[in-house]
Image (cartoon, rainbow, N blue to C red; front, side, top):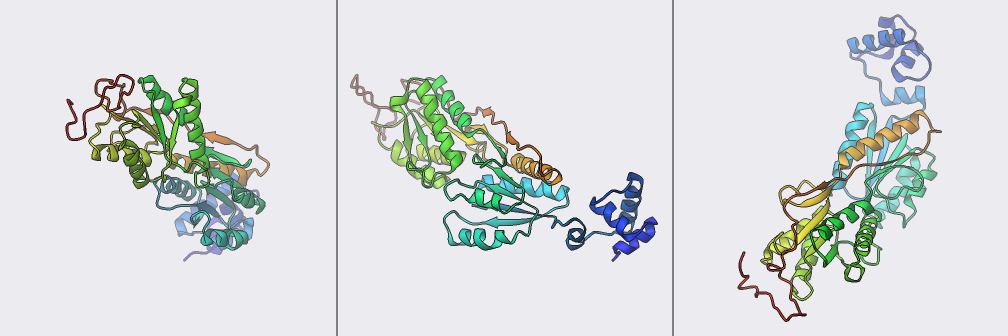
Length: 358
């Protein structure tokens, strides 16, 4: 295998010049840099991370911290980060551990403290444990993906605005009894971004004069969690809403499955909207607010590279767009088809065994 000495000899320069040309550390004329790179390519030379580190003082490694590896959002962000880092010839070290776990405490107290990276990308870090602040204290560039930033460079969608638009979509279709489904009411297990989505729902209901009828139904932020909570919510005709805003698409899809199991037609009797545009959204024809986590991962790398090039650069927050994608899980309220019990005029919906006309 060719070494740096072979590249230098082929390019007609010293070893130190060849090293500077390939690592970008120190001045080298563009003509010399091109000649050295051509020689390296012809010889099949690949600089090792340790060699680059000796010259630049950097490891060419970026750490990525995230709470989950099996959720759609986190997997998509990670894929975007990895794709962008490969383009910059950087390695990736992944640190994944559930919140409030022993593995996570070990990660922050020992592994991350070793600082074997040039920068960090923190995905979905929560404010409660002050973990993002601890990452910043390591003295390395940090970029946050998600709603919470602690003054760092950050990438996210506007979670509050997304939920507000989702709720306004249902209000615009004539819905007045709209439930927000997903998340923990006391906030202990609700992510920062999900909490902002709940705030957006409440703001939209308040602006529509529906504050008194606003309801938040707890569920785990998963498809089974959404299914279980929706099955209980929809099983009682007296309190059944006409519209559901899912905290995310997984919860919204769970609600659609629960409605189908109960014989409640979507969207004729129940409108459901989510947030994310999950891979399953098209399959369930789910109306949703789209976000592109792969693109957010790439944007996070771009911000981190800016910091590495210029540590004094101004802090940036990038808000990725989240357009409304209308499919067929939402529709205007049809009072004649509604399954709601109308106590005011004593009109009762058909029972479950005789669902009435389609």
